[in-house]
Image (tube, one colour):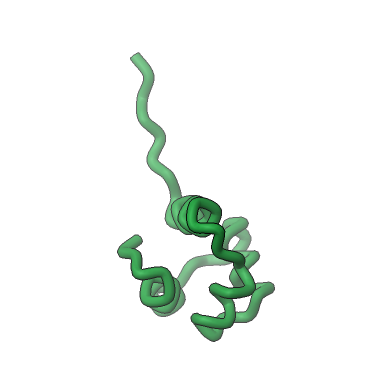
Length: 64
């Protein structure tokens, strides 16, 4: 029996961007978060704050 692995929020955001052909630069522009910080969030190198998650969800129309 195989257990399902739960995806992290950054992983779900990355998949959403890829599936919709959306670039990280666009997300940075829409959220006001620097492209470098977006990259670090999506690579799980920095903590995703509730404020930044709200900005990302608002930009993407998602509820991660």
